[in-house]
Image 1 (cartoon, rainbow, N blue to C red):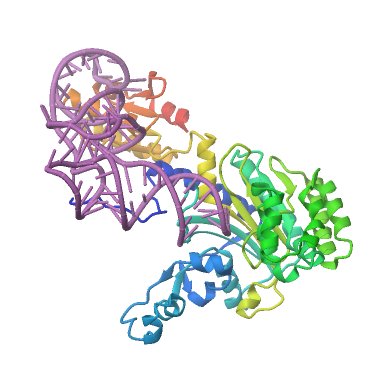
Image 2: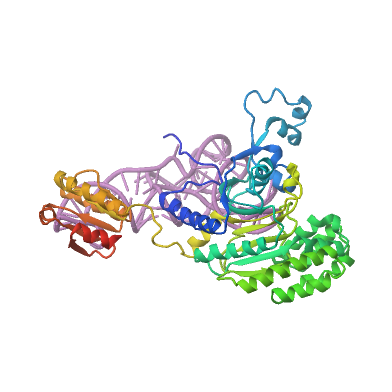
Length: 460
RNA sequence: GUGGUUGUAGCUCAGCUGGUUAGAGCGCUGGUUUGUGGUGCCGGAAGUCGCGGGUUCGAGUCCCGUCUUCCACCCCA
């Protein structure tokens, strides 16, 4: 091997235990998705470029992986564009496909494309990888999994209520307690922007506001001024900057502030509804919090927006996010279909569970029992038992090579230890003569001589 | 995309202001002992010092480029 091979930045290999743990998270999420009535779909890893481009804002377009065309793709490129090294013009000429950036936009495309086969409201879930050409950091990868649940074809706020409960259910089941489900409403943000005369700069305004808890009110004001929002207008925002109290109290302040804004009031009403229902239903471990600074960059949100923060003390960006989008399918030609959905960030949830030591011991790769192979007759005797064990639902395997020396026996026990196999069954002449098995617990070191049936019922 | 940071045996890291054959712990492996691992003792293997240039009599150590890691922006899962 001349040079060590490597994988691209922001990607990872997953070893058996890691895969097992990832599947534990995925299965938990999937289980609850299905209990809430969502049905699975899958879409291709890559889409036509025009399906994805322009849906996530300028920043999003930059982070979309573009796939180079096949064949003599340079022949068709405009010479002038090539000569000028204008990547914005050349790029669409040499790349007609791109890796998906999230699961929501491909889903919107799916809904439009299959609208005649879909019964609305349509609830789907999707667990697949997505790709972003982002610079990697802790919890930030170029290839990662999203677990999405979306409902299209219903503008009922009960969906938002259900999705908040779904977050709580999943995180509770994962023993990930005290997550914060932050909620806000784009209509409120629009109302505020309107009130200060910045309705045309909604994006700039929200992006700046989003940084409040990070850089502080003064810096946010600075940024807004830089974006051309007047100082007078910003003064009106003071109540927003100093918002305090519980959900209801914060909402009251906002309600007063937005008295003159119709859209703002609509947003307030929506949040009041959701909050009242959630209070009634209760949450098991998560906390629902109104975060008026929550903006989320994705352009297509129009109503409620969500973002889930890991428990306090864990250094990790959001582990989930979502919101309502009213016009996403209209971009593909289907009007008046409202959608709302949430996403779980599998890879980040993994890192949080790992940091907090929350993976159950039962989640591990490998079998429950190893049968040692101390002789050919013994192996034959053991093989029958291995199958009986498996039929009883016990993950079992027989060590393939027959030990001919003490050293090789040694190696077999060591194999069990290395693979964290919790039980070893030793069969030698004595055991065969007695029609019994010697069960060794690798954790305690205890051994007992038992009949096969007794071992099965013990391990089951 | 911007600024910074990291990269030395399988793993975690030492290697001061450039100077002879690059070290430790853990792991791995061979021996010893227990029908069967975890303990002990004795021995062993293993590194183009990320990669490519440059400065120098001489570079793991300085300079440049590049890749990777992590961090702060940006943005987000």
